Image (tube, rainbow, N blue to C red):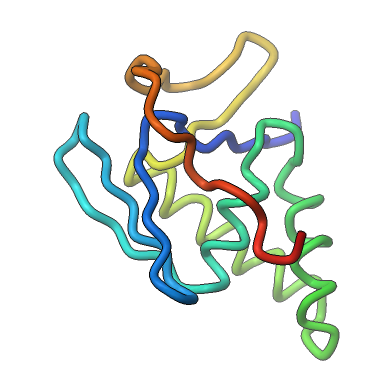
Amino acid sequence: MKRIPQARVDVEAVDFGSELFLYDRGNDAVHVLNATARQILHLCDGEHDVEEIAVELARHFPNVPTSLVLQDVERTLDDLATKAIVVWLDAQGPTPPGPPDRGRRRAPGPRPWD
């Protein structure tokens, strides 16, 4: 089964240059993402699987083998899932479920390369 990450919609995001500050009100936690983790999070739309995210990210790093990019993407997504910033989707929906959408601004916002 493909692993498909989905960014939680209730995590607030604030841009600070190349970094992205995330506030998870439900867990009262702040997280700071660097530019690469930010790009990965932007692709966590519930549509792209892990391999597709790695291929897209590899386009921005043409001198790095896609296999290494895939390893970094997997490690980053596992970290984001552990911190409850993303959830994994399967045929039944998100696992584990995140807090309910309370109408807050959706993280991650527009992609920096759009």
